[in-house]
Length: 243
Image 1: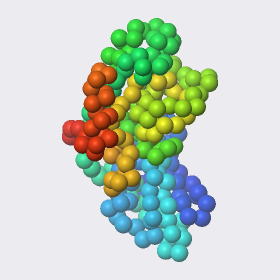
Image 2: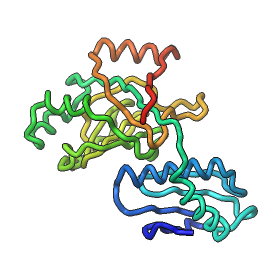
Image 3: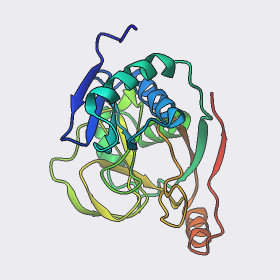
Image 4: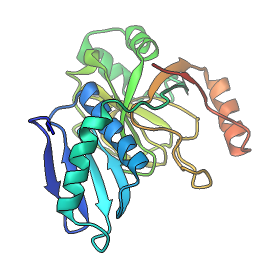
């Protein structure tokens, strides 16, 4: 059995094991994490309670009365190899985004930092297919990339104490979408009225790491129409089959 040299198994207390694939933010590396998660799900390993994917690792929670860290490590080592052959349906989500000045609080600052016009920045937003790396921090919060054009953009020196639900923000080549009102220190460039997290759904989050996003521009009126449809439970976010 050949295990990739960068692979590490790190204990996390006595009920979880972290499978770490590397130390960088990389789309191919993250796909290996997603593939292992799918392989673990299909294998139905005894004692595994939950798996949590991140940028570069998979956290595996287990019941210590049903399995041990060593038994789990052996099983996961085998699944790492098998995971490269695992395929899953990939969705390209079509996300409405309003970049009116009411929502794009930091667009002017980004224009200054990047020495690009606001129109050019919007063009980058709407022409780039973005990869969902992970979901976390708050319920349903999306971390996505890749924006090499925004790599030099730093986070705000003074985080805001309140961002509206649906705020879309970027920093250091990556982006986030805040599903609920919360504090945040990223640069806000717009807002989506699309629902990101709903406890009445199973699973509550629509999105899965490995999916992609294409932002679609909407004006203020369409943004409000979508928000009202969401409130009535009549809006469904569209998606296409991805590669």
